[in-house]
Image (cartoon, rainbow, N blue to C red; front, side, top):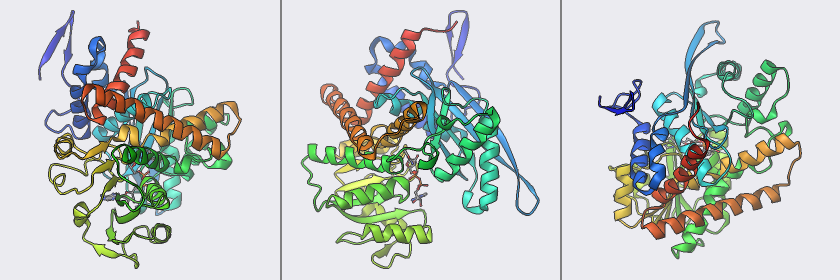
Length: 434
Ligand SMILES: NC(=O)c1ccc[n+]([C@@H]2O[C@H](COP(=O)([O-])OP(=O)(O)OC[C@H]3O[C@@H](n4cnc5c(N)ncnc54)[C@H](O)[C@@H]3O)[C@@H](O)[C@H]2O)c1
């Protein structure tokens, strides 16, 4: 491994816990930072700070299973950067979660929070577990033990978790209760995405999908794509994809294809989204929906459509399928769905990509509102929340669009320019401790 002498010490190019040949999603983030560095001017001298998470906690999460066995799960909490405020980011329960993935997701939270200018740093957590294999009691014990283990570094002014893939309001309620029990007082502000009756915010459940719709509709307007009748394909039909599909359908678009982990359904005239949501809720998947044609999952990428919304997992749009995509506009609901190679292919083909770090920032924006409401114990109306959300999302998109035009770069690079400058300016002003 190469080393660069710095003063009397030395800085290794990569932290020792990373393997240069298997960087995973973290490698994508590093490439994105490399791309933006030439645009950072003087602040580029701090860029190394983005290439190393501030703090990583790996925890063993042992729980008693219903059959009496003790099972151990691997959990993480990563705080990527806290120059602009406390860490903020979701918790993912998934069997394939890795440290590299959580590091990348934490870093994208730093970028996203800076891009929409909410006063948070970036963090993320996860447990390597398939929660569908657990009973409700096992899930609760897992959540509570994990929360206790990461309790060392989270807190309303330190790092505030939220829902992500396979975590929801109920899990946030258990996290809030566990943290509160451990510190001896009710601390609603320790997590966001809570039930409304426990300090949650109106509008939070729909916020990410609403943000995807807001920036998507605005981007469509700017490229002259009418929403009425536009064909939309959505990958992932959970919190983000389900709400985004509903809002696009309500705006007159035709949601022609929906793919999830277990199937893909297609209807040229547009799927009945409320009926599909009810089907997915009852069956855990869109597969088997009667009022649409079942497609092989991979055929999703060839679907004739105008707008594509990846809203499932990362690394879905790759060198292998980027050529097949027929959409003019891609709105990234998921985090990290497009690899850098695929990004280049899409740019060359003239497909506009509204990147995750702006498109799915609606969730964290309303999480910010929730956190503020918890601190002040004063709660806002849903109308007020949605108005503020739309204003922030539109303002942020407008800002990065201008930078993209000025510097002739993609919206992703423009968003990274705006966000990295904000983070590194904070770093610069704070100076290095001690
Ligand atoms: N929930 C939020 O507020 C929020 C905010 C910002 C970003 N995100 C990101 O959005 C994405 C989805 O999150 P969510 O909260 O909607 O999760 P969710 O658990 O509610 O839904 C996930 C959906 O993805 C589908 N899916 C899983 N694996 C798949 C696969 N291999 N192929 C196709 N579909 C698959 C599932 O079937 C499900 O429909 C994630 O990347 C997450 O990080 C979520």
